[in-house]
Length: 494
Ligand code: HEM
Image (cartoon, rainbow, N blue to C red; front, side, top):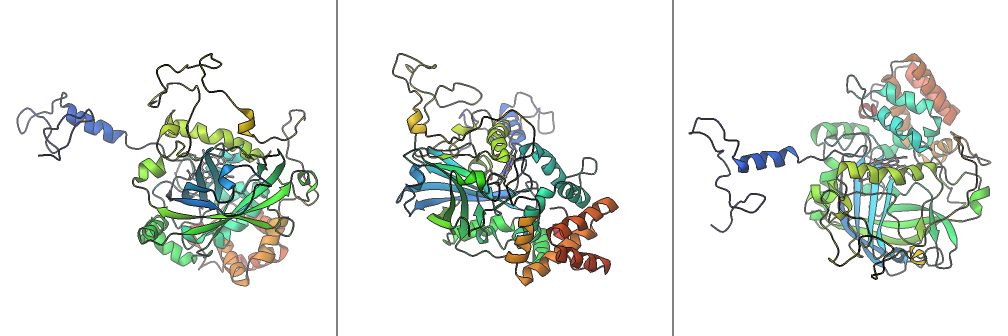
């Protein structure tokens, strides 16, 4: 036989089906190392799921920079004509690995560009804003969206308690309770970098940017009743849809745009541009096309290439930096820390995580599962006298900004038009269609119906009245008449 099984050390196995026992009906031998190895391997198959964004799926593709962005960034990936291999992972935020794809939620939208200057990740969502604006609140936010400690059940009171006590959430919650909370598929949603990032050109000039990824498939919603049905009948609906579309040769494409703000504008712009709960209205900073990408290749192995993919806002390249957004600064620490725990110290050596279009050269050394190593003669320290690599600040082109303040714990500075509810109200009044508004009201009424604590119910009404007084009045009417029978039950808990 030429096609035979082996132990992990490569020796032929005697059986795939029978353990070693003292006679056919006897006890099992501990020295059956083939059995022990097989069970031990099985017992270690799972790595901890992501916390949050555990449920997802993704595919590889190619990005092409079609426009001249050299006035704004020197990043090789965004120079006109550059093509880069890429990976995109979509996800839900709150649900666990086996959770239904069509529960109402924000969708994660994590991009990786394998560039000639290192891997560049944009880890965003299908909404341009977020629930909170300081990373110190993030664990509380996620706890409130997952499960109660005792019953391990999801709980509308807990979610709305957190949201209504954190009114900076109103803009994002308006998105989630609206049509963006239930997409037709992952192919039919837009992505956003959400945060403000910095671009630096070859002259060292700096700009603030926001990314937008617009689906050529269109942005389409799923009706709540359909989502609820699918949550029960096909919990992998979005994952299946993406995988099967790519297998059929229907490759989804997104156009990449940026809004660009001159560096100095940030100080006086009417909204604090480093507040992730806000957007920059397009009238102030129009969208500028950068290029497009197409997903054209399913993973060969979901675990190796999607589950072990370690996206991080700290994966930056020359000509691109972060901004003084408190959420983003916290994330830059948090993701690699989570991944060392979730996957292991040397997670960046795995094929999906290591750079594909450049080399890794540094003096990081050893650690669990390290298998990449330099020449025997290479020094393991720097500086050295043996021609080893050294940092090149001119090549790195890091993001920078001025900061000479005293250390404080304080809310970020409000700009002239900053408040918690204003942009949420604009979204409701000026962006939602009449049909969207009707669905939104029904969803909110359904959410109200799931609340049991009077103080949270009162705050719920106050919250939406603060977003829009007309909406508040309609909501009071709807819940007074018990008009919640056909509300969106899958929304409860997301
Ligand atoms: C301070 C705030 C935040 C913290 C501490 C945080 C933390 C985390 C952690 C620990 C993970 C799991 C990473 C892993 O195990 O690989 C994760 C995943 C993720 N987060 Fe955040 N997050 C924050 C805010 C945000 C924001 C504002 C966005 C979007 C704009 C976002 C989008 C995502 C996405 C898309 C994933 C899944 C990435 C993937 O597909 O692997 N997060 N987050």
